[in-house]
Image (cartoon, rainbow, N blue to C red; front, side, top):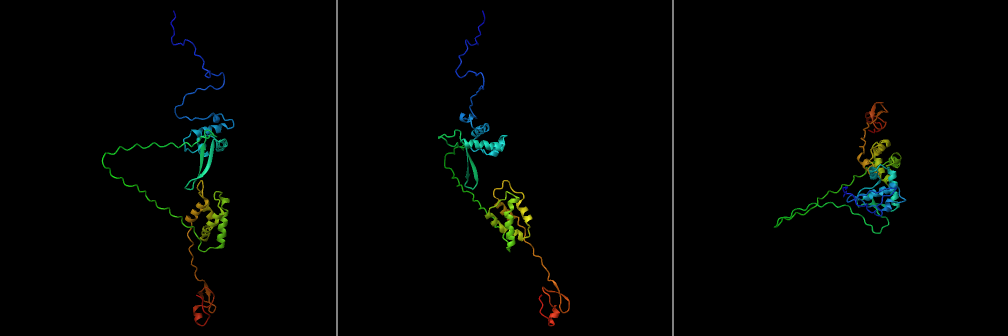
Length: 294
C-alpha cells in the first residue's frame, strides 16, 4: 500500500474573487508598510492632466517633513532634472491645486516664499501639518526633601546697540562739473554692470560722495573700477553696497603743493627779484619808485 503524503493538500483552495493572477498587464506584489511610508491618493497617482514629472514631484514633496526647502534650486540639487523642467512641474502642481506658493515679509524685513502642499486639493478639511517636535530633555532627578536654595533670577545680557553707518563723504568745495560728472557716472553704471541698477533717489543720494572722489583726484575709470569689481553674489541692495564702498574706499585729500613767488625783473635796474606782480625791486622802490607787491 502506498504511503500517504500528509503534507499535500487534500484539495486545491477555492479561488478568492479579485486575487486571481491576471493574464496580462501589471501584477502587484505588495508588502504591508509599517513605517516610513506616505499615503498618496489615486487622484494624484493617476492624474490624467499632470505630467509624470509633476506627479513624481508632488509625491516627493508630500513625503518630506514640514520645514524642508522645496524651491527650484534644492530640488535641482536632489534630482537630475533641469531647473526649467522642475519649474514647469511646480507650475503644473500650482495650476491643479496641489501646491501654493506665496511671498511673505518677515518681521526683520526679509522676504521668503511660503510653500503649501495639498494632498487632496479642494478638500474643506485641510490644516497645516506641524513641524516635528524635538525630544524633550530628560528630567532632572527630584530634589532632596528640605529647603532648597532659591535660584538666581535670569537676567538677559544687554546687547550694545548697532552703531549707525558713517555719513556719506561730502565735497569741501562743491563744483557743478563734479556734481554733473557724478550723476552721469551713477546713471550709466548699470550699462557696465547690470547688477548695479539704481533708482533716481539713489543716484541723487550718492552723487555728493562721488563728487568728493572727483575732488580728490579720482578719474571716472578709477572710481568705476572700485565700485564694480568683486561684487557679492547675489547682490541684494546695490545702493547699500555703493554707499559702503564710497565711504570706506575714499582716497585721501590732495596735499596742496607750495608754489614759490615768481621771479620778476625790476623795471628800473633790471635786477631779478621775487614778487607776485611786475614792478621795481626793494632798492629802487625805496629810491622813490612805485610801491612793490611782495
